[in-house]
Image 1 (cartoon, helix red, strand yellow):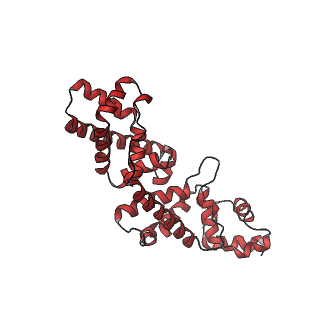
Image 2 (cartoon, rainbow, N blue to C red):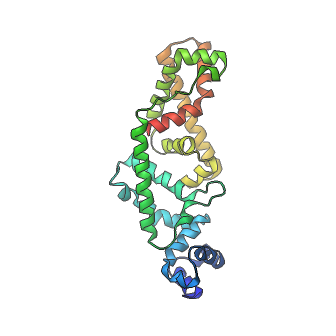
Image 3 (cartoon, helix red, strand yellow):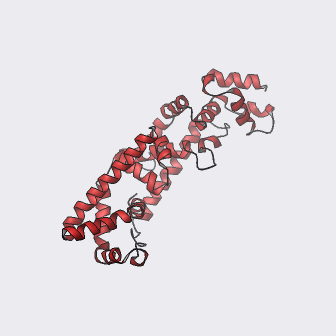
Amino acid sequence: MSTDVFLARAHAERPSAWIADAVFLAHARSLVASDAELSNLLAGDLFLACACAHGVEAAIVALDKEHLARVREFAASVDSSPEFVRELTQRLRARLLVADGDKPARIASYTGRGSLGGWVRVSAVRLARDISRSERAGAAREQDEDLRPEEIDPELGYLKRAYGEAVSRAVQEALASVEGQTRTLLKMHYVDGLSIDQVGVAFGVSRATSARMLAAARATLVTGIRERLATMVGVGAEEADSLLAFVRSRLDVSLARALKTAG
């Protein structure tokens, strides 16, 4: 097949303005041994995936509408609850569209030899099973096993020994009160290790908005933890401030562990 015919097939299905022909052809040629094998590729689907890998907003919108909107259907065999589907959709979007250091976004690995819809379905089911397994395995783990007094200053070490169990309970209960998009955002950041920029891509928002979302989620959690600790522990104002400092000093570790455990 000539490259002109291959490009014509792609343009018949997708807007040619999305990405330069030279860029698309270079990507397609990296997947085959010769131009003659281009006829084996689904040009329109490959064009969409290539454009998404290059961050073309219109292409990402098309991916959302045509494929990611079907995540509930894809996840039905694992968990079709609204909360699970919402989390799966956001995490799948991040997995497919967010680059990892020098590695391109995962959608760039789509080869065009099968339908993009089928490829997204397989990715969704695999991720759904991973999330479900993580939830089951996490239920049996200790949340704060590495909060060792010797790793922090003497005062905070005392607070860990005296109130470590209360802190774990407070973190768990505060997290349990957080649902929907906020919970998914926290998982992406603390469990999956996505940066503020990457979370922004996953949620389709700017970096500034992503940073505000994360700051608001942390503030809500800290407030919830403090309120629960006050009820559980019943300490004086000075010790309460020190206890809150302990919580803040280890919040990232505690959240990562608690979110893995809670699923």
